[in-house]
Structures are given as C-alpha cells and as structure tokens.
Amino acid sequence: MPLRQARPPTTAGSDDPAAAPIPLRPHHLVCLVGFRGHGYSDSFTANMAALAARLRGPGGETTPLVIRPMADAICLPCPRRRGSGCRDAGRIAALDRRHGERLGLETGARLSWGAALARIRRKVHPDDLATLCAGCRWLPLGFCSDALETLRKTGAAPPFPEGKASKGEAPSGRDTTSGSAPLPSRMGDAAT
Ligand code: SF4
Image (tube, rainbow, N blue to C red):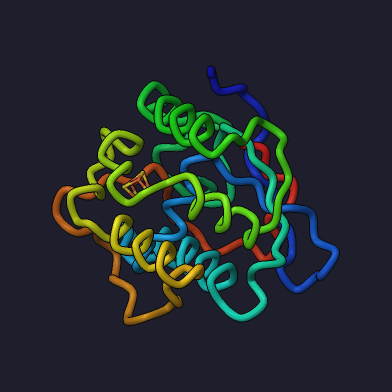
C-alpha cells in the first residue's frame, strides 16, 4: 500500500485519559513487544522507550491505538522519515502489508494495546518473524522472537524497561525505520 503524504505527526499528551489513539504502523505493534531499548540515537531511543514503557507498564493494556500504514508515533523523530512517508518506503510498506494481513488489521482499525497483544499472541508465532520481518536487520538479534515467546507463554509482553537503554547507537546491523526525538507528550493525530 503506498504511503500517503500528509502532515507529520502531531503530539498528544499521554497524561490525558481521553487522549486520541496512538497511531501505529501495523508492523510496529510487534516491534513494540520486542523493543529492548536500543536505537540509532538518544532521541530515537528515548521516544520509543517511553512508548514501550507506557504500553508495557502497569495499565498500558487500555491504551488506545489506531492502525495507519504511514509514519507513526515511533517514526516521528526518525531521520529516515519523509513527511508521512519513509526513505525506505518499499521495504517498510512490505513489512506493514505482511504484518497487517497476518494480524487482520486494516487501515483505521482501532484497538487497545491489550487487544493488540492478544491478537499477536493468537496469530504470530515466534518462528513466523523470519518471513513477516524479512528485511529487518533487528531480526537476527532474536529480541522480538524471544519477546513473542514470552507473550505466548505468559499472555504479557516482557516488562519494560528491563535494563539500561543504549546511548545513541544501535547494535551492529540493526536497522530501524524510526528516528529520534523526545517522546511526544501526546501522540494523537499522528497520521504520518
Ligand atoms: S524483527 Fe524487526 S520488524 Fe520484526 S518485530 Fe522485530 S524490530 Fe520489528
């Protein structure tokens, strides 16, 4: 699915219980399950770490999400983001298409993080990532398959943070589609 060009994500406050749903690309749902605190830069890591901590922390299951196959709350600070699109549009679109189809989530779908976890647990086996995530340089590290195994066994994503986030650089070979910036206090209408 081609990425629509639109305005970059806006921010929406996480302290507002009535906050607009957090926009996420389909494949970023599983990325958020496996994230361990590494990223390209301090600001990228801080952004994704704060979102992972919010979702995977106490009460995170009720956080509302909306599925949008374009730059999202994670992409917001990404140096590869080009407006609502991505420098690596083809590869990222393929990831979104495979994950969206597997999870049965279409553009505009709304669900809670808890419902997303349940769906991932039901529909994605750790061994599936070799196909679903083909082209992602994080894949060989095994973080995401390990996290899916935890989800499969316990029904919950691994807690986060579980250690100290990296400072400014990814493990060798990791690619990320997201960039870096302070976590938006609000990430509502971020159709990127
Ligand atoms: S392997 Fe890559 S694309 Fe797949 S869930 Fe992990 S970080 Fe995301």
